[in-house]
Length: 352
Image (tube, rainbow, N blue to C red; front, side, top):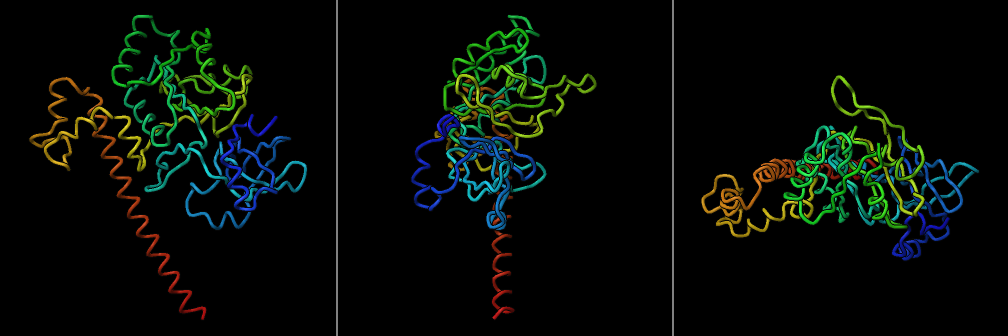
């Protein structure tokens, strides 16, 4: 086992030297358990926690370690270690934190490719795929779409679904698979490269954990059936976990996400809806909302069939959501700044 086998990249070497961290043990976070982390090094795995200084200098949840992070640790016995620093992240896939406005929740870090998994027999939704694409593009992560459970539908229906996806989403690979009869699994395995990190994104019940087990060849992740009463997936994977596959690829499974809240992801948004964004350059007004304005090139393109109507409606919905997050984030920063100023003045006046 080498650091490269865990996905280590040379750009981190300079950071270690410049920050006097080269003497520490380097490892990668392979699992999270409520502010405790399993860190895998070249030699072994450690149950780890962050040091007090790192804890008290955090500003948001994004400052804590996440699955996929490279960290420096100091073991203090055979099984435990302290995390002293998080190394710079190459990529970060994040969504809006559930129930917390203006804050991000990191899904995984240092990801090269994301497998966006959807089941073809239930809850199939191209709008949701576009949401996941936006998360990927915002982080410069390459997306791959996987349509799972194809053994449950006929060939004609499958071809129709694939066609619908490819009509709306261009230049993204689409794989069709079945974890039951293993159809299509070999093609997925062939695209996984040694030393590259992949994560699984999708709702509960689409078969992510089963796919993880299939790709690894072992029963790493617990799986469950779809609820018969709600026809929705049960949350089985409760935390993120990183696995090294037999062919050298690195895979991160994630809990199912029923909410995929957008953050301030302008680049991701523009890439997902590139057709709309390109057409909008011809709008009469620079601040066009593409809803009611005269001279709107997007509305004209929608009417002549150049832009897909479902994609357009999803664009409007996600644009409104993104603007709300950005507005909330600005308000949060303003409050934090005011609180910091108040605290500074209090210290100045009471601790002279």
